[in-house]
Image (cartoon, rainbow, N blue to C red; front, side, top):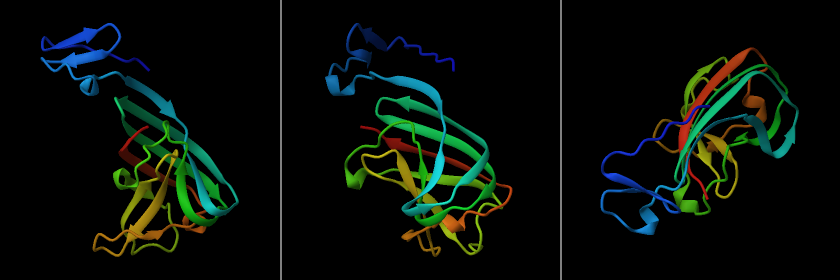
Length: 171
């Protein structure tokens, strides 16, 4: 895609260091990366993976600013025979950071006919995994505790769709 970048009157560009804002000269505060692009996701169970999913649409976009990566993806599928446990969204555009306490998360902003037998699920989200390019689907019981993970057979074998958005820190 087209990427535009402009520097305001308070910012200056260094030849080798990136963009510096205001009078700040600390190397750790230099913006040295900006990127926009597309990516393709997958759905896979981490434990005992089996089966497959037939995507009819799998369009992901990302914006990476420094170490932060913002993702958005729209998935539709016509059939699924996924099995196994610990269902994950795979193929994130960049490897996630390595500290367990700084994992990010994604939100499912829309789903249509996507899950089977989970009509009472609350707090459905995805938790990123350190030093990997995937995120685990998790849900709770409505009180904010999201410790239960989806399994492959929770994905409906029908025409279904899901939108996912979020942000995570890269390595």
